[in-house]
Image (cartoon, rainbow, N blue to C red; front, side, top):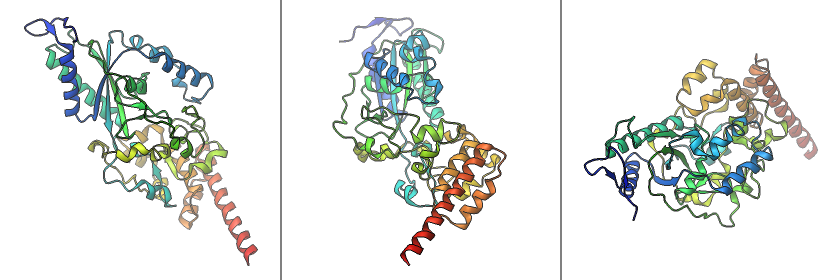
Length: 381
């Protein structure tokens, strides 16, 4: 049985029952919509430290320089938040109810594919807001003010150098899939969040990995970005290149992008555990018709329209130039129509060299396919 630890203030007895409080925290979390809440010690395991070091040494982080910065803050949570003792890790599902099936978006030549996580509201704000509400529930439960002891905390959701998947694994709410994402028995379509807290809560046992010999995610990657050891090369990953990368998309990879304009879900779509996915939180319902947006329509957006239509969306953070760059590649991979050619021609002299180059590349791809079709028809006649 967990020993009671003296704390002030903490009610009439002056003691907190941390085992009971741990149970209460999980109850509060479920009421806030989290599909799972787990507790871990604020310690990063040795194998996770070694995995990160290998990944960085190989340069697999690509141009995501922020991954190579503040490594100590990732590996030693107390350097990020000195008071941390426990990590409350949460899952929030996002699979959008009512969205056009992903097969439709991936197979229709005029439709853009947007990663399912980005069809609704920006998860950073949603998850952190609920974690702060969870913190307030904990404060009320133990009877301390926001600045009082023994409880201080910080909320994170992909917003600081935190080993999110590691803590999800340690807290028992998920395991690390071979695609490096967190997976549970309800699949991988979820966001993670963490509450670093000073409370010495009762930790949960780590999750067991249930991927086994399955390698469907590895085989499904369009660019071969997932290694046999289950690590991602960001220099090849479509998600990283369409979201994190600000330069030109490598020419040799562009055809592999298909019509994916923001992120890529192929590894998750291939995962058998996602057969058990349930619909996600209402906050992530589809906005602006992004589940089946026509490429020519969104390529025509002005910068002001981009900012207005995508207000509150995670997509907005990539900026207008990258948005047009990504769509230009998708149009170059689409079946030619007069509207597609006209839309690309309208951007071929864009003020941005980045947009110009990708629009002209796309026009060149349409020309190549047209010439190939003509040669094929002549050869068969």
